[in-house]
Length: 400
Ligand code: PLP
Image (cartoon, rainbow, N blue to C red; front, top):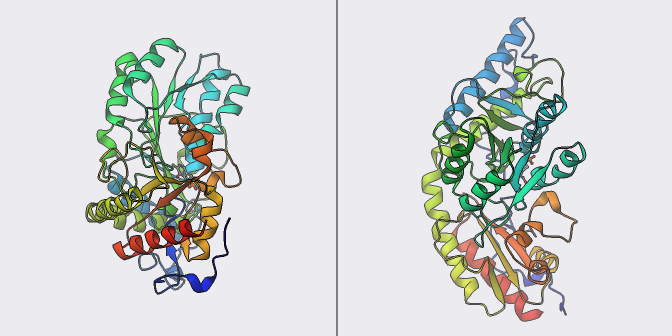
C-alpha cells in the first residue's frame, strides 16, 4: 500500500523543481536554437511558399533552406525530403500508398513486427480491412527483428511488397540490425520491395547516413530532438502514390500549405542534435550504465529485457524499460511524479491502454509488463539527475 508521498518528501530537486525522464515521448525545446517571435518578422516570412510574389518567394526560400539543412543532417540525397505533420503522418503516407497498387489489382502485402510504434501497428487493422494482408515477424529476446525470421517470412509471403521495420524501439531502446535486415530483404527481389523504417528514436542519438542504408523511406519527428510539435520529415527516395490529395505541395506527397516555421525550427534542431550527437551519446552511455547498475542492485527491479547489460550496443543509451515488483507501472509513474520525476509507462501514443504489446512481443508476460515503466533521457540529463532518480525509486520501494 502506498503510504502517501508528500511534496516535502522530494529529494535534491534540481533548479526547476523537476527531473524530466520522458524524452522518448517529447524532448524539451532547444530554445536557444529556435527563432523568437521577433525573428518571425523577417520580410516575407509569413507568405505562402506557393505564391509567386516576393513574400511567397521569401517563404519558399526559408522552406527550401530548411529542407537542405535536414537533407544534409540526415545524409540524404536531393529530392528525398518531404515535410509532414510528424512521424505518424509520414508512416501513414507510406503504409496507405499500398492501397493504390491493391486497387489496381497488383497483389500487395506488408511485413512488419508487433514491436513497432502504434503509428504502424494500429494501421494494420485498416490495411487488412481494405484487403491488404499484414504479416508480423517475431522479434528476438533483445527486442529487435532478426534477419532469420525475415528471410523465412519473405520466402513464405510471396505477396509482400512492403517492409516496415523500426530502427530504435521507443519502449525498450532495442536497436535493430537494419543493415543486415535490408540485405536479407534485397536478396529476395532486389529493389522491388519497398523498405520503410520508423527512425524517430534514432535521430540525433544514433548516428546514421540515409544514403548508405538502402532503405526507400523513413519517418522522423521534430519534437523528439527539441524541435516543435506537429512537424516531421518523410524521407522518400522512390515515387509512391498517396491517398490524400490537395494543392500539390511537397511534390504532392504531402499536400497542404507548408508549415514553414515548423520546418525552419526542425532544421535548426536537427542540425544541432546531429552535430553534437557523438559526445551526447558518450555521456548517455555512461549515465545509462550507472542507472542499470543501480537498478540491478535493487532486489525488486527487473531490467526489461533481462539480458540487457549496463553497457550494451544493442540498445539506445537513452531508453530503458524496468519493472518493479508489486508496483503497477502507473502507480510508479504517479509516485515518481509526486517526488518531482517524470517517467512513463511506454509510448505516449498508447497512454490509457493497459496493454503493453511491445513488451508482449519480446516475450514479457502481462504480469511483469503491468509493473514496467520507461525511463528515457536526453542531452541535458546529468549523472546527478540519475542519482536523484535512483534515490527516489529507493524511497518509493521502501514505502510500498
Ligand atoms: N514513431 C516513434 C518510434 C515514436 O516514438 C513516435 C512518437 O511517439 C512516433 C512515431 C510518432 O511521432 P509524431 O508524434 O511526430 O507523430
